Image 1 (cartoon, rainbow over the protein chains, first blue to last red):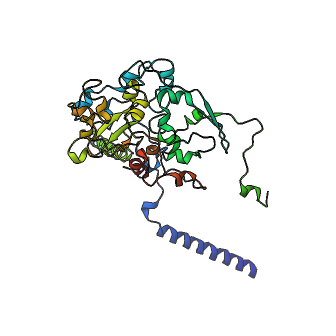
Image 2: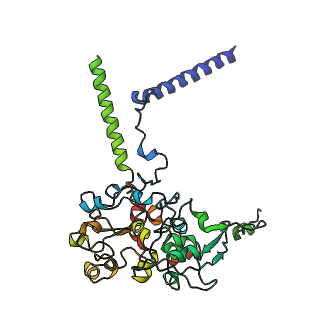
Image 3: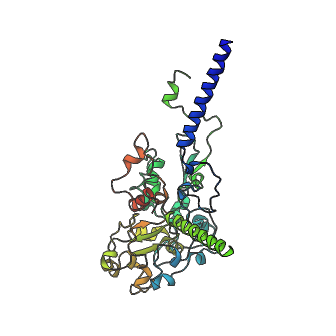
Length: 225
Length: 167
């Protein structure tokens, strides 16, 4: 009987204490923090939470000069300049850069730019020689075609200042190219840009069937392997 | 009652448009000029002229790279040629063609000096300009170490807006 009373007393005490605590909690909670269903007005998502906030996409492709953000629309000359889309009509297209495939345009005869400043009959000094460069990592090996380059440029544009014309003499990596060295002197600035869409234009020779990526030292020495 | 409702609706509309407008202004403003358009502002702003905009696309339709970059001696670097009007009227650089014979002559100031005042020297749309973070520095120091202190053409002017995309 005594023990029963004790048990009842204990439960009662416990219940009281719990209710007191919960009361204290509800007292501490200000009214404004009570959950209430609120509908955010549409279009008010914070700019910090927008999708892919770092992606900079051009507002308009091939905009005419007065609307392109670089030419001053207050300058009368900007309105006289030829809009690019007028000139690009009928040219082969790509997904990057000017959205024009300049090499194809030249090779298929859509364009015939002069090789000499005054004489339109001068023919380009073209060399057809492909250079294969093996790539350490898993990317396909690089084929450098001299043909499209010599159709546009002269040997002296690249040799010997940018590329030493000797096998194995040129160390090239993508960081250097992105920083404007080696191929990056032109590619990524005026000739086709360096984007995910254009990797395979250079990295075009698939690795052999049995090729495996070299393991890093940290992986080879890993005792838990 | 209905008047009050419409007033409330109007208030809400105004606040929403204000927020949307503020968001739009905070987004990075990317000019949509042609890839490889070069802005040259070595001396123009200081001389009270608009900077020069050189459209590569227009010239490459008419001439191959070799004509300017091998024969006329244009360096592969935006702003690296130190072109002045004195050199142009002497027949150097642009003046080799812009002489009234091959192309229109130099009295058409606004055709070249057409840039938005204050635009820095740059190659518009270059990969360096589009990088979200500075270019990767490889562990062996290959790429980064090879780069000279004065970053290449697009890089110098371009890496700044890349670091601060909010403006």
